[in-house]
Amino acid sequence: MRRHLLYLARTVLLLVTANTAVAASGDETACAALGPAFAGRHGLSLETAPALAHSVGLPAFCQLRGRAAGKVGFEMRLPLHSDWNGKFLLAGCGGFCGQLLPDKPGYSNSINEALKNGYAAMAHDSGHRAASTADTDWARSGDDRALALWAEKVLPTLVAVADEIIDAYYQRTPNRRYFSGCSNGGRLGLVAAQRYPDLFDGIAAGGPILDLSGNAGVQGAWMIQQAWTAAGAPRFSPEQVHRLAAHVRSACDTLDGVEDNLVAAPERCQPDLSALRCAADPDPGCMSEDQLQRVAALYRGAHDGETQLFPGLPPGSEHLWPFWITGLDGQPAWGGLASQGFLDIYRRVPAGEHVKPTDIDVVAEAAQMAASPVALLANATDPDLSGLRAAGSKLLLWHGWADPLILPQRTIRYFEAATATNGGAAALGQQARLFLVPGHGHCWEAPGLAPDLFDPVQILDAWVEQNVPPAQIVARNHLDPEAANATALLCPYPQRAIHDTRGPANQAASYRCRE
Image (cartoon, rainbow, N blue to C red; front, side):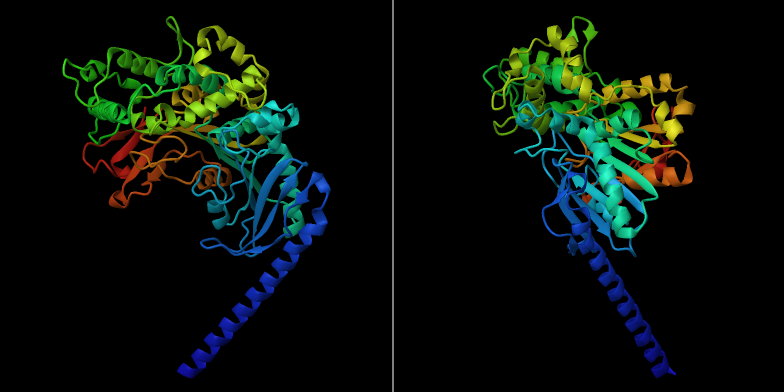
């Protein structure tokens, strides 16, 4: 009997192996056929012949890399027929794009996590190549088409290409189309929601720089002027920023009712900075009166007298200032480089030349920046989301409460305007929801101070398929083995997570979402 069962088991294994080989052979043939089928269509050119790829940690996939519309560098990854879930994901790209990064890890402007879950997925460079994602020489070379692609046109351009590739490979079009992006990718997500609401069944948009001219222009110049001298020297040392961060956490940790070394209610945080003032015998990390005033200006945001022109940096984000704002080891911070890139486009300086941000009169030029051609093209601030309701599409928004680069208060203001414009919270909540993430910085570029990791596409897909808005998100820990089991409860705005006063502070089950 045992020998008979072993024989049956071996027979089944051989049949499965044979069927898998046949399926793989069919995928290989179908993948190779995409080359001659698409050469020259949509202005499409392939850099290499399509072929099955086998990468460590990923399922086998059909790989296409090339250019669409004669300009947009892309890579599309198609799961084997047996693995495809019938859906397509288009990823966003960060900063001013210009780089093709199909193997970018995680959930921010990335495709491999979706590929693992059976999605046909596409990454892209938005229509140009650049040395870095902060570089904007390409936008000042007279190529208006490249700028239009980056600002918005890349979305319908690539969806049209992807639909035809998917149809050719699987012999059917996708059941669902999704978009997922963060930072500039989040801006693209809001562009889709406002201008192309029927392009995707669901849109995931994180940390969106929706007000490009305000965040990179007005606030960007303001931030540089507070954090850097006209000669390009940093005004703050890493030691001073580290001490500031510890002071703010100590002052504002328990504002949410929980002592967990986290500023979870930054909008209530008003730390007394005078405790950091240097005495007669200065100690490491203390600040001069000028430095304290500039820190206060960073928190306050760009102002014209008593009128706020743009929100300031959230308290609780200080640990991320050296990378994004104040610089590290004498090197410019990324936020300063990105602001420089926008200001160069805004002022229309020739490629290779640069505006000096410290020379910008923020108050005098704020309105001019908002009305500039690049702002009119790229800003995604229209609160009218009625197109989403008409299309039946869903919008999942999230933003880190500790994001010092793309400021969360601007996203909150946008969402509040959208709520008022679209029939109130109950009506808008069926199509769009915003989640604020305590301790989360900018698009998972650094581990959060609290569990902040979740799969936005998975949450979005469940919402679309079940037509039930997410009432909460349980975030897990980000790359910290010492707190691997910690979780956090994220709530749809304006709700926040309230501790039940009994359970462990590092477990989502100990909290409830309440206004």
